Image (tube, rainbow, N blue to C red):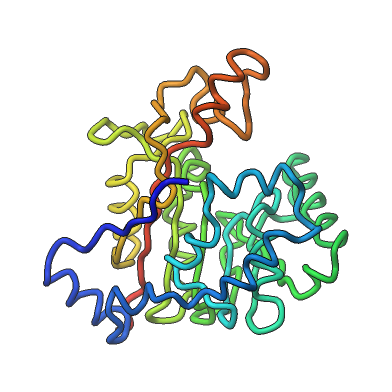
Length: 283
């Protein structure tokens, strides 16, 4: 595992801005260890998680990530585009008894077969283990028309994992960010994890490699009205050279090249990722 370290805000003025934006909560207080680690450890060891998914914990650091984002088990948490549900396996049972987990995903009534199949697959996943997933609220977030996945101002924390690169080719990133902003309570947290591009390089506006520059992402999210609060190197992977023939999908878990150089890419592991925390201003 890589060391867990926070990167502090750069100036006293920035700290003051965050304090005001988060409703008189300092950056250190908002990152307090509110996570129920014993509960999370039980969830992570659960029967509902496959061995393959458990093996990714070493790269995705779910306990440290949720702690950094301040996800206590009594909060209303919305995950954007949960995909096949890797984080659903963690968040749904963790929040089941005391909090609320909202999975804002794809439209099952879409005319696109891939989206229909993905939505049906996600529904089947939830049905397989009702003792973990029966309280999950499944909603839809799909631009340009379906942009209210939760009641405005009702969510404590919005999380999105490795999704910005999916929105950029479609030019839908600002619509998605606006939907998240609207759903959050004033002072609420937006947590973002994404494949990190090469610092200082020019950003491909379509993110065709799957990598997004960290400064580009911060500017994009700030333009939607969020205040950047803090970043962490929890999900950093310095072994990722970011020059792979099939972009980020060359690496596990996708391994798009299949057996070609498989051992090499398994040795690298999952991608280098930035982990960013923002707040919706309280005023």
